[in-house]
Length: 148
Ligand SMILES: CC(C)(COP(=O)(O)OP(=O)(O)OC[C@H]1O[C@@H](n2cnc3c(N)ncnc32)[C@H](O)[C@@H]1OP(=O)(O)O)[C@@H](O)C(=O)NCCC(=O)NCCS
Image (cartoon, rainbow, N blue to C red):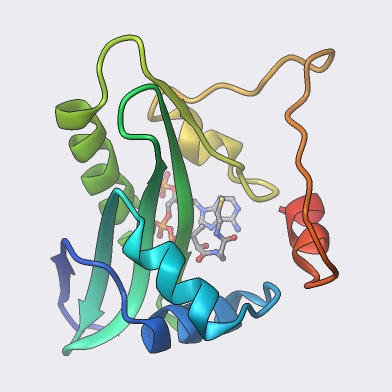
């Protein structure tokens, strides 16, 4: 596949986000919740191939103390071409400009991806102080968080 990839610093539309999300096998979420979530995003980057959305990455948080890298997704057929890395480079550049030296930046790495994020300076929490989460309702998000 030789299509050139364009990175655009904008939020995906609800439809684009849902397509990317569906491609991961993660639980689907209601459009209206997705709309609100995307509107409240601090930073987004999208990857386009021939104008078509093939990936996205977001930063959420309070914009001062806590930031979380979220929803780094590349369509399956475009994975392994460096698009995830290019988007993560953009995310880190934005954090460099917008997160102060005392800010906490978190993320949940999918299985096998710790080395990918370690390259950017992320480190796993110690085993005796694990990250924890609560998923309200039965959307199926718990399964993906447990798996990912
Ligand atoms: C995670 C994801 C965004 C990576 O995107 P990508 O475009 O395939 O990644 P890249 O091609 O930029 O590869 C980045 C690095 O990760 C490595 N990598 C790729 N697939 C991997 C896998 N399944 N497990 C571990 N490492 C992997 C690559 O070897 C590459 O390392 P390199 O730079 O040393 O060559 C993509 O696989 C994806 O969308 N996965 C499904 C959604 C998901 O789980 N997102 C959350 C991730 S925490």
